[in-house]
Length: 399
Image (tube, rainbow, N blue to C red):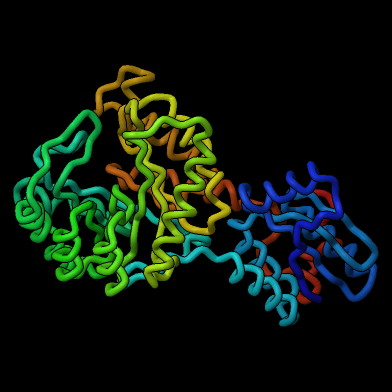
């Protein structure tokens, strides 16, 4: 047996084709066909697939169905339990997975975002960042905060030495910014080799110094907007966070404008001979012309409109001003609304969560992933045509 992927064709009406394309590109649904040797086996496969609560059509020796990309690993694991001797079937599913795998290459690390999200902790060593400015100025405070974030499950820790908060900020010279961030970078390199190190900066000299110090990721709120930055990135192997900023723009159609921005930005980066697997996208929530307004909420909702670009998308809403705008919450009291917004964006495809509160975000991700990949099977031991009868399709027709 084998599973093949169906392409969206023009055999349907324009509307039906558009709906199918939307399911594939925005909702990350795969359209699959399971080819079976006979009708009896196809019936067994149909019963098996129905446990995943997905649209399905049983046509003679074929079973056609849609399936969420982010649950494909769960399907493969179940197939290995049921049809462990069918190498062709397992290989065909793994080929589909590899075709849609979203990889982020970042310095020493390679993240498979299709399998697992990235928890991206924020460490601002600035006196004036909007939420935690001034908290982590001493060596002991930095050491304690890093240890806390690592213990809570941070995959990445980003060091920031220059705020870009809305409402204006004081720009510091590159030398001062470098002096702020290097101690934290060195501490991370020496003590936490399992954690990727990021630096949040838009200044070329700071980027160069950070790369020299051994960071894995550069986050640029100006989207690598100069030839010199791109030359530096092409010579390095760091991951890149490229951000859409709209502090000087008004939009008619926000979604279309953002799509065009990232298409052009990714094209420019690729033209500089930079592998796009190194790049992830940040919509720039909080960077609207009118900060903390309804443009931010529209971006939270339309994050899935960027899934067609096949690049990881960052969720960067931690404790931002929408909590004050909607609920009059002080920055210290915005964790709850932050987690709600992050959940909505995570379910729409945001796979890199940039956060101040690592422990709570790790819990969020574990809870959502557990729910999204929980499909009811009576037994998880053995099973299928080649395993115990207690888990075979014929032993429980209705679950």
